[in-house]
Image (cartoon, rainbow, N blue to C red; front, top):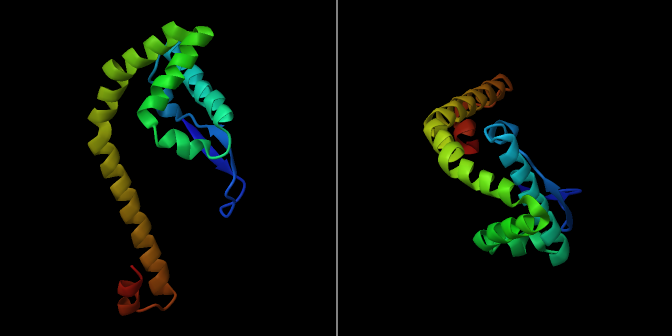
Length: 137
């Protein structure tokens, strides 16, 4: 995924960074993994041509940008890799992730609940009463 890389939270300018989520990336074959990287670097090449504001421009045309990145990667000679990426995403990866969604959400909910409870305990230990806690949360 091509995302902005900000130097600071107040900075309005940004560079680009390719982010790979390894647990998902590993679900693809080696051929499709090459397709993932070619696709992402095609996004980077297009972002460079768009110049400042590339992220907003690309985000506003998301579906078209995805197709455009595939076309660039194919022009670079990665057609078989892009085909493998698309096929595996549709037939293997998306169904697998869909089947795990409820379990993932349950795990996130439990972690969020544990974090919230720990924060409340720290606040109580600091002497913040229940009424103040209700107003803060």
